[in-house]
Every structure is written in C-alpha cells, then in structure tokens.
Length: 194
Image 1 (tube, rainbow, N blue to C red):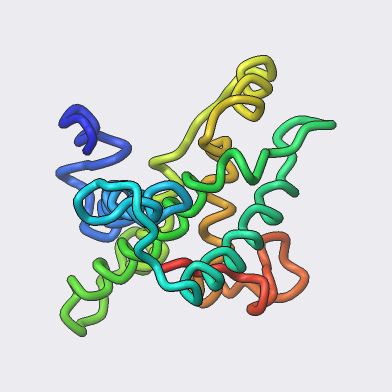
Image 2 (cartoon, one colour; image 1 turned 180 degrees about the vertical axis):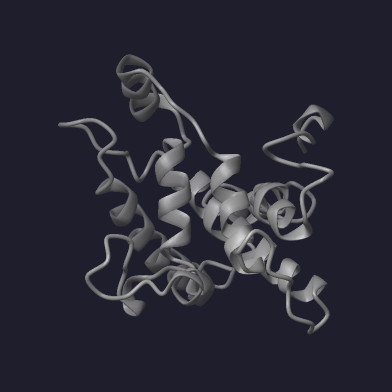
C-alpha cells in the first residue's frame, strides 16, 4: 500500500513512456508486493498468522541467497569509515531486488514480443533502468546519511539502485557491463530471490 500522492514524478509520469514508468512505479509496486515474502513477511501465512509455512529446503535456499545480499550491502560505504548494515536493510534490499525483477518481467511482457522503440537514443531497457534510477535520486548531508545508515532499514538511495541492478541479468546486457567494470558482479555472486 502506498499513498496516491506517490503517483507523480519521479515515481510515475503520465507523459513518460511505459519503459520509464515500469522502471520507476512498477519497481515500487513490485517492491511492496514482495515484502510479503521477504525475511519478515515470509514468516506470516496468507491470513496474516505468524506461521512457518515454507518447506525446510525453501527456507535453506532463501537464507543462502539472503546471506549473499547481506554481504554485498555491508560492503557499501556511503561515508568514509561507515558501511551499510546489510542485516538491518535486508528486507528492503530483498524488496528492491525482487521489485526490479518483477517490474522488468512485466515491462517485457507488455511489449507483446515487439521491440521497444528507441526514444532519445535510448532503448526500452535503457529507459527502464533510467526510470528506476531516477525514482531514487537523492542527496543527503553527512549527518543525515550517518543517521540513516545507523537506524533506517532502507539502504541509501545510491545503493538501493546500484545494489539491485548489479544483481539483475538484463542490466549486464543492456549496458554491456563486463569483468573489470565497477558495477560488475560475477554470475555466481548475483542474487535473484524471486
């Protein structure tokens, strides 16, 4: 659930093309839906009861993947001498990861097998990822950033974007990201939860 006031730029823009909106508001919608299956939401059944409804094998695989996400985000340093707390931000990082994946699949499905138009020299996939990044533009003073990394379950905006996209397979093909590039993660280190 999110307030209707969110349905304005940069999250939703009625004059932007679908790729941008799927990348922005589509990812946010997918993010919110996926909270039902993150490290906290997965502990509740479909009726909202605290009940372990997962198989032991599913929980084991989920925990293995989320440990990798914790390590990835714990390595991000928004301020010299301080890092993101990957445990504290895990639920939101899972939701960003899953929301991006869900929105991208929905966007590609919306094309109905036809190629996306090139607009302003950008492919549909480039506009999708740009829409995602634009939705999380932000700037914070050092004191606010320090407060956020100590207490907020959301990673700083830069790492919400960079952390999610570097785990997404289409990001690599869209931008030609390769070994040696700053955003590159080896395939075996990439995490896809859903």
